[in-house]
Length: 274
Image (cartoon, rainbow, N blue to C red):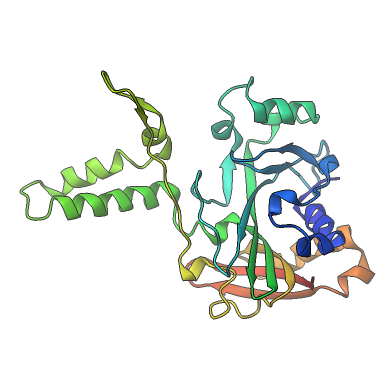
């Protein structure tokens, strides 16, 4: 069986490595539970799919975010989200990610919607905080809406005082609601270079899981699994899955509590010391 919970246990079982490695990418991840591992392209890691998915589906996508402060490192390639469609990530069945997943035994497109997690590490004055956090912690509004409203702000600034109707401005802003639309490489006639626009996403204090003022429950020198929930009974269901992976005795060493995101509701946290 493979899942984000098994991956978190693997991190805990090898937590001594966090004090030895300079970069998260140097961590000795268990390749037996991974369907792909890459540097510089999303995702950095992916959990193998389970053929039987009664309890654990597997297939989660993981991005590594390493920082030398208690700020979450910027997202340089893709805007963070809680779920991503694997067909939007894999553009070709001849591409690296598809071939890696296929070689690992995955029926790649049998689970199109994939849960996304970010392995976040922050370091400060010899202390560390490590969080394996669901992407919905960062995606508090839809990506399309985020991009559209950001471009609309640019248009409002540049077109202030103009006679252009607001509905026209809104239409112009909506053109840029899909990241793929403007992130393609553009080639202009007679230009000796090509141009590509990229989105750099920076986390605000409210979305900074490492922020001690916002989230004091995330202690120094701990490793945390952070999972969203909406219904009151959901944390118990999530805890039962963690217990299946860890067993009763190990569960007694794990602190379980909830934190509230100011924009996106409740998350259950499983925490243990490094």
